[in-house]
Image (tube, rainbow over all chains, first blue to last red; front, side):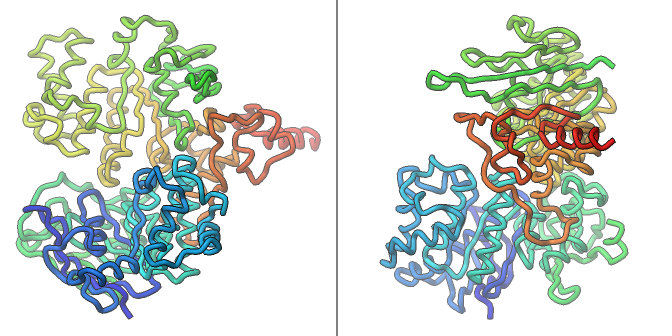
Length: 305
Length: 325
């Protein structure tokens, strides 16, 4: 059963189309990564799903309900079931509130808070009960992100959206928080939409990954398969650009704009005239591995990549 | 070979509520002509403060001390501001992390690239212009004339960083300090910029001191590496050695905790705890509270630097070896 179903979602900021007809599904208890570079629309997609920005078109179904149509009490109820962890724990926590005030707020809204419950939640995210009355500035970046995670979990949500949740952390701390998220996901059977620019981080925590480029989805498939055998030229380029990667792909050219065709065509070494004229639809190459490309990398090409 | 930059026992401290916060505590390294050496570490490890001290960018009341701090054999400490100005941006230049703040938003790119050429090399406007255009195309900008007449906000992040690199290299420096040069950039752009830096290094022959938190970047471009932790260098090695045989427990923990595509998925090994605060320096090894292999003396005695590793385990190994044979 799909918890979240996104169909042809588009979001515009003025005339600029930040997200252009993106579709995917996320089953309950599953993890999906959205990967892309700046301007790929990955964060805007997440924000639209949580109704933090209004979509220009498309449909978002959450447990069968159309999120875009929700108003008033129904919208509040939805917000309780879908929570977010932001990138920067320095700006996402109110500096004048104690940990207890921050973490209990979503709970108090629902009048369910008790002291024992708070202690257990803090322990669950790797903090101590005595931390409850401290302020954010008394914590390190990693601990702050644990507080933000505790806040997100407080209303016992069905869906957690984590937007670059470990990107601001140092490597040794990042590993701790990634492990925490993976444990929580498994133990609480959380559904996570995990947004990151780092494919290796996504692979660590997600079973599936969607690759976005300039507002469009270009590849969607099992995380390990997309990382090891990328089929879209852009994904192949992304994988080979990761420092330390032994792979090489042809250099991509400088960015240009297209109208109508494939968004990656101006930079693609495989582009033919059809790529400039018509946007390639998502097509399934093998079971649950989809690519929006007329000339996806063949198996032989993937091996040499 | 004479090192082009020699840093011997550098310490930097900042005054804080009647005490001193020691951000860098006894850092030593040398940079040979034409090589790339990376200072790698996490937030608060002192890597950026070290680079600022080398560039003479730390002013009193902060305290910069060193047994020796030599650039091409000349002492840098106690230079006058006039001497610093002759050096900075000329033979010793810097590439900063964020190209948008490194560039002046109200000056055209061309004027900014011409400036070091006119000031340091005494070029007249016409020849400075020609050389600036040549540099803009050398750093891979497609339409140098158009970029020359643009303002920084009209360029993408990758293009801006190329401009910053052109400015840093146009006077053919002997040392460039690159402080997180690709951290603000997307990964595909990062790959292009790293490639560019390597090819320009072959051409210009400058030495690069690379400051970064990203071991992937280090692996990609550095010849040698110094790993920083809590204001100290804890391990120095060649790049191959460090990645194939890391010896300090911190280095090992750091390498293990990076998610990588070429590693089987599983729980990431992580380093427990957090780095110690500069407010309460530890008497022994600063990594000891997080270390899985600590010995009794680690908590009380600072570890000596042996074979490029600041760790008591190395001394223990050496003692065992000499006892055994």
